[in-house]
Image: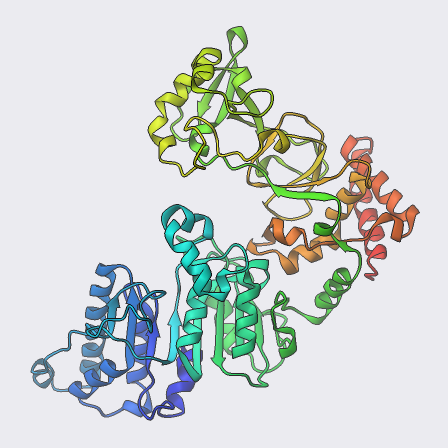
Length: 575
């Protein structure tokens, strides 16, 4: 709050000659706006004002939008209460305060969709907001493209037409909030938003990064890799502070680690000036490093190592390697079941994961499915979950009649959950009783390298099982036959080289925990065996094979992994 709004009020009136106009585009119950009001009314620009004059200042300066009507109602009242409390604290005559007719703030705090309303043709004359703002701050909503397809499918194409940040594949709603906020900022205006850190390094964030780099100066980025800042949002937060217009001011990047990062980490950050703080994880990346490419902020040493990795080899996405996510059923609570024990006549007793009910079901109607939590580096992947699989041997969905006749127990179970399955978004021609698979036969092929998408890194293993599905929480890397050794690729993906790439390019979701994103994985550069020391690549492959096949004694397994690290670093020129 102080870093974003402070320069606008400490330096006197805004560029338009009056108090700065402040906007929270997703104000909720007004937490940011109340804090901004308190800061504004404590500034030297508006001291010694009467209650009436303070209300007039807020009427000119504070604005907000939100789609929740009740939240808007509360924001208006909390703002008035905040002003009244400050008047009392400053010793203003209570009777004089009581005689002041409070404004309704109907023109200031508006129940509307910011992306369609503010500054656009949908503005009505009654609720017209200003055309530009001096300060925009707040915490936009986090809504992924997948969720938008489910809840607002008609809006997705509209967003893609209107916003640059929606044109790079997958996107999140908060990205559009940043883009529109930039459009509404006056030149020299300031933006301070609490957003997801995904746009910093993801492919989908490229358009937004380019837009920011061309039209603004990023003054500060603060990441919290270890902390869940918002209890109800399981995303890693980044604080973004920028000013409209280009300048030579350096960007300060801070990575606040530890469970106390929100409290003690931020206090440390406020005490650090120009330079670097090891304790707070602060550096000042050169301005020219911020563009459309991923913003790989960090210290110089790790940055140099990462740069070396990315300068060699060929991107995995350009090689004869298929990289994909596992399958999404669309209704895990129905299709995914826990095996209890084998039953008579080839049946299996299974337990529904959500409600704990048990059912006997035909084993031929089930397939083992590997989830991310089942995978550990170099160890055989063990499936602890079964998936209802109503398909024939060619991967075509069974007709309802065939399913009823061949697997009556499985059909009866699915029939009892029909209402839930009918509510699932599916392709037009998909029957209600099948999972939302694209090509189940291809998705079960082997051998393949697999890893949990959410993990501590370096957790790939080789899966040679046929007819075993992989869940959407699994990343799959499958070299084409007769190209290069999958064991060589396995060793590299479990090496310190890939770990450096992961730390710099994949989003963090906790202490040293990262999301392995398929699109980012395709950007990893692989040194091809024919272009490198053949003996080194063969040695990496042999060590990885030994780790997978269990031919190494327990005391030698860690030595083998360390040796793979040494060999991989030599291939990539990392000392």
